[in-house]
Amino acid sequence: MMVLDAFRSEWVKLRRPTLSLGVFGGLAAAASFFVVLLFSQAAAVGPGSADLPSLAVLAQPNGLIHGVNRVVVLLGIVAFGIAAFQIASEYSLGTLRQLLVRQPRRAVFLGGKLLGVLSFLLAAVVFASFAAGGVAVVMAHARHVPVGAWFSATGIADLTRALGELLLAVTGFTILGLAVGLLLRSAVFAVIVGFAYLVAVESIVGRVLPATSKWLPGQLLLGVGQGGNATTSFSRALIISVIYLALVAVLTTYAFVRRDVTA
Amino acid sequence: MLDPDNAAAADLAVNVSGLTKRFGTRIVVDHLDLDIPRGSVCGFVGPNGAGKTTTIRMLLGLIEPTGGRGTVLGQDLASPQSYLHKVGALIESPAFYPQLSGKDNLLALARLGGIDTTILPTVLDRVGLSQRARDRYRNYSLGMKQRLGIAAALLASPELLILDEPANGLDPAGIVEMRDLIRSLADDGMTIFVSSHLLAEIEHICDRLVMISDGKTVFQGEVAGLRATRGNELVLRPDRASDLASLVALVQQADFDVRVEDAATGIEVAVVEAGIEHAAALNRMAMAADITLIQIFERARSLEEAFFELTGSHSRDVAATHSLGGIR
Image (cartoon, rainbow over all chains, first blue to last red; front, side):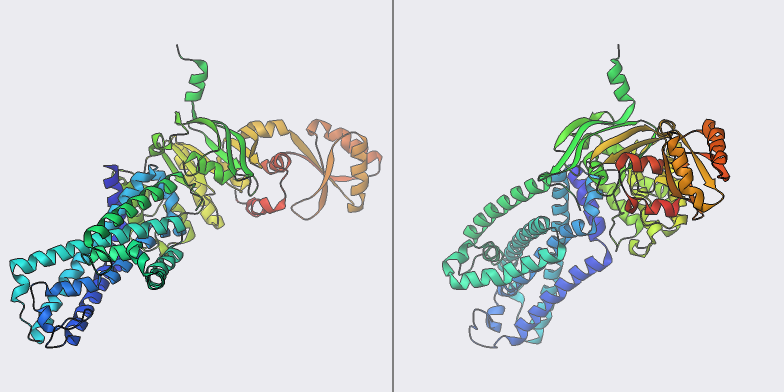
């Protein structure tokens, strides 16, 4: 019940127009733009490449999944950044002290905040997925790609599974974002450090020491979001990600509960 | 039969002893004792860095004490969740979400605390923000922000209200507004614990006082009691300013403590630690030494002087006090 109170409190902040329109609209626009690029650049014939499937491949029942898989990184980074910002800004604004007087059970507060931010981001991703799907239908029509297979039982099952995997990955990035934001306590610093790690550090480490890629948290979440990839299988990525995230959640909660609030 | 100690403790909203906080090797609060009777308005004063805010944060469960024990509203200090639902607090400067309206800021706090949100119009009205409730917080004046902070503190219909520097940054009109608001809350029977630099304000609104210095309690008790123990003093002003040194020497010879002080007018006077019963004798002594006194009067020793003496603090802590001393 108290977690629900914290969740409802969080939504008062999340629902403000600038944030909700910005995130829902921004993600939908970004995903849609990606779909436009995918269809406009796809070759009319042949199998295409791993990075850019052909129109023939896109017409298959799992054609839309190619689009979904390619936005995992984008959505993950956005989820990480928003989650980190939401918790770190409580420190920088000084609002945390007010909040913890009203809800001194810090684990409850944190749980409600996680649920609030997570539900917000998952809703935004679902919305963006539907928007991008609509754009895909329009683009398919423009490039004379038959879409009947997308709406077959197989196509819908594939798409649902891909969306589920994407939401799992976003959940992981959100938990990581909250943890980094909470530990660093500075919204700007948390977002910069998080982005630098996910985009630059993991990429460099992965190139220099390829064997480490299948153990890096960002790469593992990418593997979850893509339903498995060349680096790791889905089930392996999911299991190791859950272990990582559980450790992160326990350590972060412990630090949050024990730490003095001087902000 | 009720244990007298327990009965006494039950009359205290805050009853804490040996409260200590150490950050590394630095002791910020050092075995502080606090007794705040229910229904009182208790001032909490001390120089900058004396440990006031740390103490308040420990009472609010934001900082874990290194040592000490006690109760707040009859509940164990170590379990803040057991009493914070009956406590309202404004900690340092008010902190809210700039993009949200005043009302939505309160809504977020009310929901978090499981508080019935129908109370929002009442608390907004109480602090005079009803008309501006839908405006964004970032557009509020400093005084409005402070009042919203008080409104947030009132959400829980608190039995104990803790205000940390509520007049910070306010202009004179804002300070008067804040004082009236605190008085009206006290009239409702709420226990109020208010920290401030502004000794004149504390003197106006508080019936009880806790003074700390370097994290230690240096005084705790009734404001009137503090004044009474400090006694009154006599102010002597010679006709000729050049006679002041001779007057001081004369008074010292008579075994009185005396100091020179700038009066509000900029004229130096001798201030003698003595009551009105000594006025005639001092006047005769001055006349015998050919010093004419054009002013001699008794005055109560101010809280400010007691503060100086007890805390050993200096001017940086009371600059605001002087500038606000005239607001009555």
